[in-house]
Length: 328
View 1 (spheres, rainbow, N blue to C red):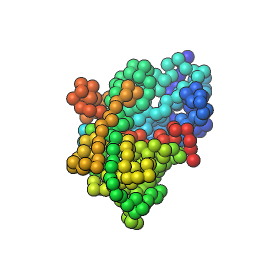
View 2 (spheres, rainbow, N blue to C red):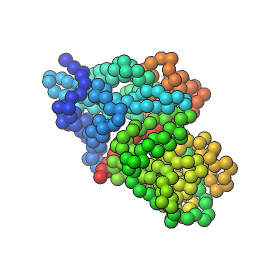
View 3 (cartoon, one colour):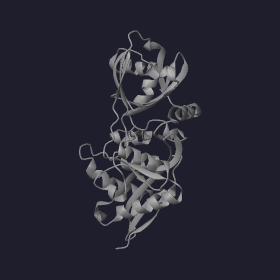
View 4 (cartoon, rainbow, N blue to C red):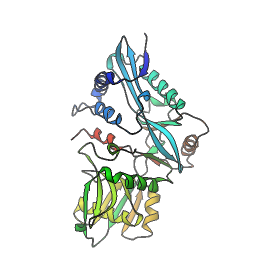
């Protein structure tokens, strides 16, 4: 059995899409919508995409598997470092249980180390990935529940508009201001595909107040869960109150966010109209593999594992929102 692992070529795109579709079809039995082939295509347009980290497994001259490691800049304990997200990894059902996934992962790890990436991060099965050194419960996708009781609020002075390429400089600057001291954060990137919505289940919008752009918000279109909010400190709770009004028809109610409890407590300054509840939850599926010893990420993982540090928050880029099964 000869398994060849190599870099993906543009001529492989159709074969990779077919393998990815067949590999994930069994995970979507209810609606038969398989988002992963679309996710691969979107991630190829990311600002950090590296074809040397998009790996193809060949057997008998056919594409049998594929793994995509997407490089990103991360904040780890207040410092910028290089890492990658492994998603998705696919092996065609006809070639599963032959060690193809193992070879793809190990080759990806080797290439990442050569490029100076200190870790790989994923959301996956806790019965499989730990055998490759991935540690479970290393980060959270949940931050805080914000309970708002604002009384009078002029909702009519607020509106939302689509994100434009002209907005990117101030959005990116604001991201770094808001996340520069985080325990853990993933910087989405620098092109428009990493800051606008790709599925109808989520929205990326600029918040406008009296014709002035005051913030960027990414939120779930049905639950109004706030996945990202970038604004000046004094505007954060006004924007949250506006979203409470959009959800409940009044300036009050509960909003779930991926904003850290510590950050919101700092901003609330004892505001009695705001109650903040910590919802940080690091599930076993949220895993990190340290690739280079003696790094900030190794120290972070050791502290989280020992309980000395609360898991940080990871918000995956908007490309991943297509997994709700609905695309525009």
